[in-house]
Length: 337
Image (cartoon, rainbow, N blue to C red; front, side):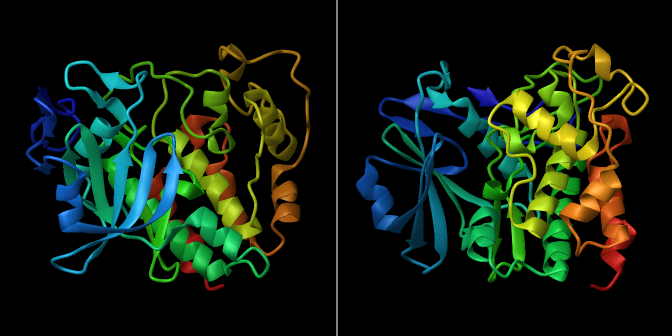
């Protein structure tokens, strides 16, 4: 089976041939082993460093070079299988995209390995992720200058993705890997990412982890673009500055109300077309607040220029939300702490 990104995405792609071969899977970007022993002959598996619905991640080392790596063993879910090839669609998507996305702030996919019918993705190694780093530094926090550096790197990687018409759709601290003692950031986990071309086609609105999900998605919008990623960036910026999630709802409506309490309930004046979104209700509580004052109260150490950037990330109207490229040129990144 030949898998290829949609034409017209703004960048060239190579075919990736993934096909079953008796008890093996093959790609032109992989090593194929008869069993797990073959993989272990090449890599030492040191310890488990992550586990989730996607599978298990091991810290490892390539034996012939001593290079540290992360080995991601893909969990096969019967609800997420490509019938033609017997591989999870999220894994296929991540492989195809990461083969093309080469940037200092995007995690590098080094190799794909198959052991029998098991699929392993081998990535460059990063010491931790942003969520763990923030927890480790919860008491003292991290400096404004470090927030600027990490946010700039996030925007650099994101602008590169968007320039190649790729939406990440699941930006959150857990998916932002850190190395060099927290000084280098790399965007990871492209399992929910999508390529897009105008005109925009309907997609599922149930993407992005709830706390970082843009209000248009929470209200049922299915035609969306890069702006959903920028809302997530705004949420992550606040979390880096405050040390805790800003919209920690336990349901879509609860998350919406967290947003409304901080930024005010959106009106047609603020967000043209909001009342026509599928999940909008006229009975929503009407919080009338000053978003700038609320953000100053929440983040007393953030200056006016920083608040201005944050408000541009958290614009209700997707059309008014700042782009990653525009954000990289915002004055906040040129000011001293």
